[in-house]
Image (cartoon, rainbow, N blue to C red; front, side):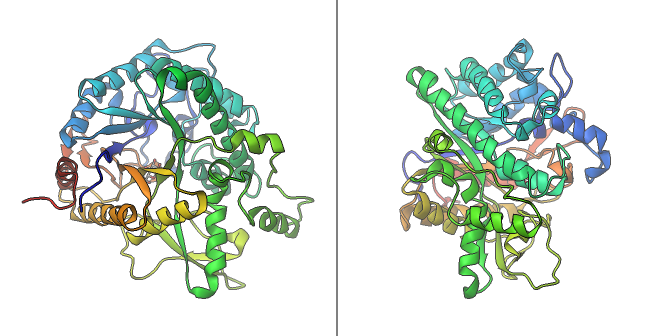
Length: 471
Ligand code: BGC
């Protein structure tokens, strides 16, 4: 399998997971800094991202690794508090901007494009104290921040992602209270966050479209985390579709569908559950006509993060259901399981089903039409060690499914981003589980990086633009 001409390969990281330097210069504190310091025991190895890979100081090595792999582009995120210490543009940090300029220029010098995520979960603490993603004004605050970064970096950055995985920082965080900002608000928080994040994304997209596209001609979207959900057995086909609408759909339909607004069926189900739970009305906010129009069509491509799959079935009456979306689907009265044909990995949420990525891509095309899709994350966890054949196998099988999707299903996939360029702070797992193509020695003050076998494999795929690698 040869990749089509123009297909691009990249690798990704995010600011909090790699940068460290949490309090250098005038950087402000963000919700991740605060959460890990206040709740050290919520991280498996009691670690935090204070130093992480120290990419703030090691960025030259990061660029060199990207070049060693032969990447067409490197996906990284901007730390809002590093650029705007107060969260607002009343003060722009010279050092913060300088850091990202060095990184972007360093990449450019090696012919590597930058794919920049504006927000990968590190909200400035002052904004959280005003409610964060539950305050409707966040849409304007985010737009203001976006203006700053488009202005500073837009001459060189042509691929933008506004937010990374809103389902993770809305549903994932408010439904469990686990992870920053540590606010448990089941039924309410996630849905308010969901709506506001779509408005924030839309405003940032429209700002680019109007003021920056004419001179810079770049492209903007968001990265959604799509968990592929299949029916446990045929009788649950409708349930699986509803679960997809409630996950992928709630963060895609308003932007990518022709009609706009919330996805079919979801508002009704949530309204019903809210009444059953004793709320006087639905906690799922509706969109006004103006809001539907504001959000609709605010994309230049679809950004898809994908890792794993689930099976869904109706729950038994007394079955214990874990919170959505990485546990079960309590509001759909449904249990999520996995197939015994899907190999387990070192992390409990991750089972390997390579066919899932192809089916997910086909679903997107069927739902939203013939969009350009960029895979903005895909990767595999291991423990310590350079000999990572299981990761190679995962990449090989997923890339094969992507080729089938392009060649057999006619899906317009144009970019593939391996997660991650290097081991990094893996959220609640700390440094115990590793997604890196490069291993990072976290006991070494220099945070030395060493290529794994998967790095050598990925470099040869990129070099040959093919999965058939001459030996
Ligand atoms: C996130 C990354 C994370 C990866 C592996 C993705 O959902 O965007 O930040 O490291 O999953 O857990």
